[in-house]
Image (tube, rainbow, N blue to C red):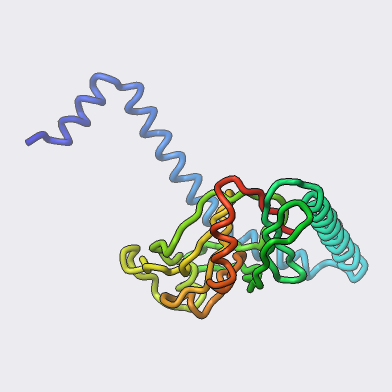
Length: 235
């Protein structure tokens, strides 16, 4: 049996520069990580301290800057949604349009609407785990494409579903649910899912945040009429 200690001694003897350089680098990285971790509480307390020291005028200025930034973001989203609506009306190809304000999915050929499905839209969500992991699930806006079509696929329920319910996360094999996203699933090129309501699994009573759910009978005809790379305009 090979002795790992002998291997380390051989590496140190044959390549002393590499051995000691790697060792020093590892020590420096561990030290830097420890320093950052030790300073996080101090950074938080300093932030809280400075916030408390702000005058009313300074807080008003800060809040007005944040509000202005939020308005700019809202304006940019509004412009993007308008552009997507125009592009959907101008294209001659068969495509899908998701109208967020009306909660509908439409199959269109040019300006003609061929099929329509009522949607339940998952709300934007930020889920934080006790260990610091964070999931940000946001409804998309813009142009996408159909990347994948699946019928009754087995679905591995994401960890955040259990975290959001305060439940322990099972092993991956135990989270695999046949038909966990219903009978029909359209997966877009950014990972967004348009799916039919499942009858089993933890998502049967929960609309996946940032996703779009329809009744199976409504999604069936649309599912058969689209293919990979079909444009999807979300506005």
